[in-house]
Structures are given as structure tokens and as C-alpha cells.
Length: 207
Ligand SMILES: CC(C)(COP(=O)(O)OP(=O)(O)OC[C@H]1O[C@@H](n2cnc3c(N)ncnc32)[C@H](O)[C@@H]1OP(=O)(O)O)[C@@H](O)C(=O)NCCC(=O)NCCS
Image 1 (cartoon, rainbow, N blue to C red):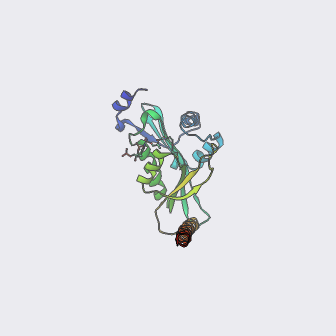
Image 2: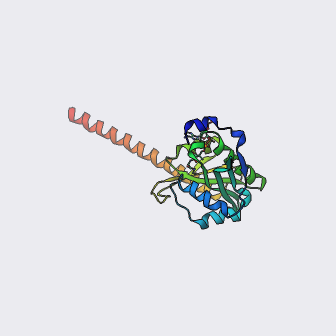
Image 3: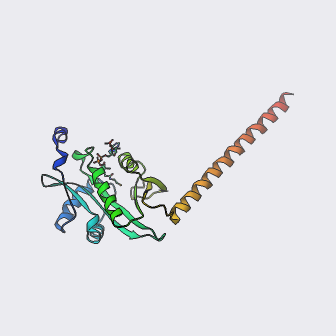
């Protein structure tokens, strides 16, 4: 499809529906496989789609599936009710038309309506488009997950809070960040001290 097609696309003609039946899974898998680096089996799709149909939103343009968001809503061990975005994809030819934002927003709104405390997701550290989208929706990075994906790439976990109950994960993350800062500060102090010692030695040599 050409860039002209994207320019002529009328976003008001995009229809959003929740998942209907197994026939849609094949089309969805084909669309997602060509857009995401991580491969997912049909069981993963079934898990999300059959378990949380109300949290699946499919976008259609003139009958063609052009975008999707799927995920779940479960009680986390921190006791917080957590929405989780499993996958979100917009076909290349339909990007930058606010469809990704719309799909993500519908997912978030539904989680809120169902009583979620937060929504969480992971994305590759190098996925600028996704990071910008999520951050513009209010998500914040809470963790870096090293070698998270099969391709070896690192991920960020991002979170959007609806309530101010602080979960265990946040507390752990904040503690790690504090520790990192402290270590950096100590390293800097040590560097300064080494520099000073070197200066003193140099001065003594010159005397
Ligand atoms: C991420 C993705 C779903 C965004 O879909 P989209 O419909 O193109 O996004 P939108 O048009 O709604 O953009 C919303 C905001 O996201 C950001 N954004 C989206 N694409 C961007 C890009 N290529 N570069 C920089 N920012 C981008 C912008 O802040 C944008 O707001 P703006 O248009 O007002 O500047 C899409 O790029 C995609 O399908 N990528 C491949 C699959 C993927 O990576 N999914 C996420 C995995 S967690």
C-alpha cells in the first residue's frame, strides 16, 4: 500500500471491535508476526483472547484488520489488580494516524472500568515509537529487564498507576535506584580523592 493511501485514509472510517471468534486469530497472528520481533504461539493468543475478550480491541478499515491490542487483568502478588498489555500492533501502512493511541486508550479505559489499580507492559528498550506512545499516555519506566526478549534485546517495564497504593515492585525498584545513586556518588567521591592524592604526589615531586 502506498503512502498516498495513508494520506487518503479517513480515520473516522476505522471500526473498533472486541474479539469475536477463532477465525480472527489466524489473521491477527499473520499481522502481528510481521510487526513484532517476538514470536508467540497460538496458545498465547487463545489465553489472552478467550480469557479477556473484553480487553481485546481489533481495528478494521474497510473490512481489513489493521490493528490490535490484547492483554489481561489479574491480581498481582502485590495484591494490586493489574492490567497487562500483551501485544499492541498497528499495520505499517496505518501508522502515525493515532490508531495505536486509540487502541491503548481503549484498553486503559476498560481496565479502569473493571477496577484495575494499574496497567503494566514491557517493550524493547530500542522501540522508540512504543516508548513515546506509552510515555505520552502517562506510563513511567519502572524496571530494566536485561536480555528479556528471544533476540537478546533488553526491555523496559512501564507502568501507569490509577491508584496511589504502592506495590512491592515499586518499592524494590526505588530501593535499587537509591542504591545505584549511592554507588555512583561513592565512585565519584573516590575518583575525586584519587585525583587529589595524585596532585599532592605531583606537588611533592616538583618541590
Ligand atoms: C507502537 C505502535 C503500536 C504505535 O502505533 P501508531 O498508530 O503508529 O501510533 P500513533 O499514531 O497512535 O502515535 C501516538 C504517539 O506515539 C508516538 N509515536 C508513534 N510512532 C512513533 C514513531 N515512529 N516515532 C516517534 N514517536 C512515535 C508519538 O508520540 C505519537 O504521537 P504524535 O503522533 O502526536 O506525535 C506502532 O508503531 C507499531 O505497531 N509498532 C510495531 C509493534 C510494536 O512495536 N508494538 C509495541 C510493542 S510493546
